[in-house]
Image (cartoon, rainbow, N blue to C red; front, top):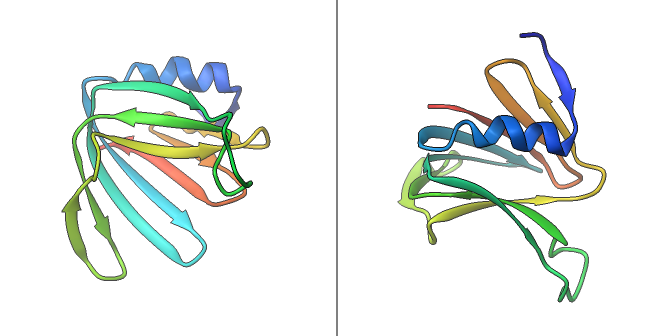
Length: 116
């Protein structure tokens, strides 16, 4: 499959197929790079209508499951604080798939999701 941009609906349809599998999420936000390995139990979305400022996203992608986060700057690994990983989404977010990896590009950063 070739590299393609996706609608949020097409992204959701494809990522749902990875439920029950081990995924690796690489987050690049400014100078911060983290890697999360997660047993993806389910995918859901959250809408926050009680935002105080623009830092809290109105929409977020919830990758639900137990996992570990590795901060590459300190090379430390620790369990996720909750059984899900949240990716903040904006209306301007771009969704891409190259047949093996998903890329979500937002104003805050780039997130790569791949099978681990």
